[in-house]
Image (cartoon, rainbow, N blue to C red):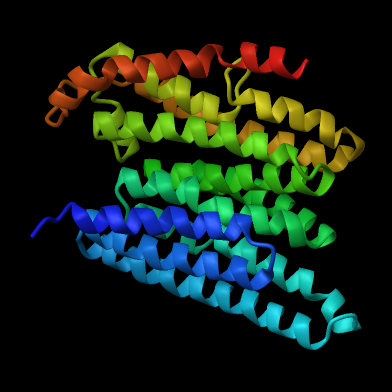
Length: 332
C-alpha cells in the first residue's frame, strides 16, 4: 500500500475547500468550503504523525470547528427565514463569533495552543497560515464592527500576556498568532483590503520560522541552549524577531502600514502597540537567554536536511532581514 497517496488526496481537498469558500457567492457555499477544509485537515493530522497527542489534537480540533460551523449554517438558515427583519440584522454578530472561534481569537482561543502542541511542524504551519484564509475572508465580508473590535483588543492583549509564561515553541507561536489576529481584525474593520497584505507577510515569516524549527528539530526553549552553531541561533532569532515585528525587519512592515490605517483610533492603536511590545519582550528574552546559556550536549540533529536546505533557509533569512526595503518602495 502506498502510504504517500492518501496525504496527497487530503491536501488536494484541503486546498479545494479553501478555494470553494473564498470564491463562493453564497453563505451556503462558504460553509460548504469550510466543511470540506475541516474534514480534509483532520486525516492529515492523524496521517502525518500518528500518536496520542495528534489523536487528541484531531478530536479537539474537530469538536471546536464543528460547533463553529454549526453556528455559521444556523445563522445562514435564520437569515433566509427572517430576511429583512430585526433578527437578520443581528446575524453578523453570531457569524463573527463563530468565525472568531474557528480562527482561535480570544476569548475563544483555549483550544488553539493545545491543538497546535499536538501537531508536527508541517501541520502546525498549515494551522497557523492556510487554515486561517477561509475564516478571515468570510469574516471580512460579514463582520460585526463593534464585536470584532472588542475581540481584536482581547486577542492582542491575551496573545501577548499569555505568551510570557510559555516554554513550548509551538505554544509561543500559537499565542503570537492570536496577537497577530488582533492586528488583522482591527485593520479589517478600518480598511477591508489591507489585512491581506498583513496576512501574506505573516504567513511568509511563519513559514520561515517553522522551517527553521523543523530543520533544527526544535520544540522547546531548553533545546535552544544546546545549539552550538551561532549561525543557527542567528537564523532562528532573526526570524522570530521579524515575526514579532521588530524594526527594521520584514515583519515590522505590516504593522508599520497598519499604524497609518489605525491612526484615527488612537486608543485601539495604543493597545495594539503595547501588546506588540510585550510580544517582542518574550522573543528578545528567548534570544538573550539562548546566547548567554551554553550546553555541550547536542544529541539530536538533522544533518542530511541541514546540508541540503541550510542555504535555502539562509536566503529566506536575508529576505526576512532586508525584505522591508523593497516592500516599502512598492508602497511609496
